[in-house]
Image (cartoon, rainbow, N blue to C red; front, side):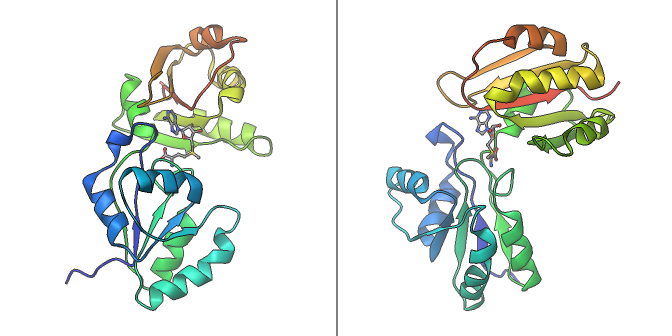
Length: 226
Ligand code: SAM
C-alpha cells in the first residue's frame, strides 16, 4: 500500500530557476508547511513560482531544537517539505537529522530527484563517474590532514565542495598528498551566467588559480589513485 510520506525533501535550483521540477512546485504547493534553511531566500523562490505556503525556519543552528516540534506536527498527521538554500537538502546542508528522526518515529520520507551541484561537476570533469567519493566540505582545521590522507588513497574519483577563498590552499594540499599529476577539474557557478569548468593536472590548476581572485561557488573533482 502506498502511504503518503510525512516529509518530502525537495531540491531547488543551484542558480538557474529553469531547473525547478514540476513535481517540486506541486509538492511545495500541496504540503501543510515548508521547512526552510533561509526563509528570505525560499520566499523569493516561492514568489517566482507563485507558491503560497507557510514557511518555518529550519537551519543548522536550530535544527536540533526544532526537531521535536516538527516531529510532533508530522505525527499529528501534517505533511511537510524540507528545502535548503539551493540544491538537495541533506547534501552538505541540513536534512540528515530530520530524516533520521522521522524514520525512528515510523514516519515516511520521500526525497525528490533534482538539482545538486556535485553531479554536473562530476560529469563535466571528464573523469570516471562510475564510482566516486563525495567528500563535500573538508574540515577547516582539525582532522583535515587525516581526512585528506584517507581519501586520496581511494581509487575512486573525488568530489569536493570548497569556498573560492580556500581553493588554492585545497589544490596545494592535494598536491602534497597525491603529487602534481592527477587530473582534476574546477567547476564554478554551475547553471549560472558565468559557468565555467577548468580541467588539467593539479599542477596546471594550481598555476591557473595562483594568486587569482576566484569568485562564486565551486566544486573540485580529482582523479582517484591509479
Ligand atoms: N545542497 C547543495 C547541493 O545539493 O549541491 C550544496 C549546498 S553547500 C552549503 C554549498 C556548496 O555547494 C558551495 O560552496 C559549492 O561548493 C557547491 N555549489 C552550490 N551551488 C553551486 C553552483 N551553482 N556551482 C558550483 N558549486 C555550487
